[in-house]
Image (cartoon, rainbow, N blue to C red; front, side):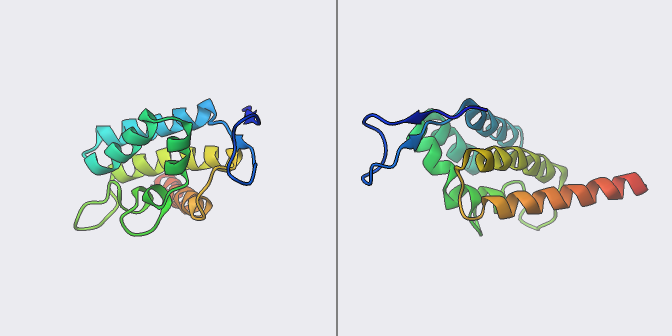
Length: 136
C-alpha cells in the first residue's frame, strides 16, 4: 500500500504535511458501509455514508473520530447490538468489517486513540469464536 504525502499548500497550521487518503481506507470504509446497510443500522450507515461522500479530509476526520471508534454510542461499541444486548451474527459481520478497517487505519497511521484497542478486542473475540466452532 502506498501513501502519498502532499507538501505544497497542504498540511495543518504547523506546516505538517497531510497524508492523502489511500484507496484501501476508502475501500474498507465502503465495506463497513455495505455491512451496516445489509443490517438495520441506519444511524451508523448514515455516518459512514456521509464521511465517504466527502473529501479526504472529511473521511479522515471520521476515521479518527469518537463516533466511529469511541465508547458508548460509537459504531465500534453499539452497531449491530440489539437493545436487549447479546452478540448476534450481524454484530460479528460488523466486527469483521471494523477489524479490516482498523488494521488498514493502523497501517496508514490514521487512527483514533481507541482504534487499536477495539481492533484487538474484536480479533480476540473472533479467535475465541473460531476456537469454539472448531470444538463443536
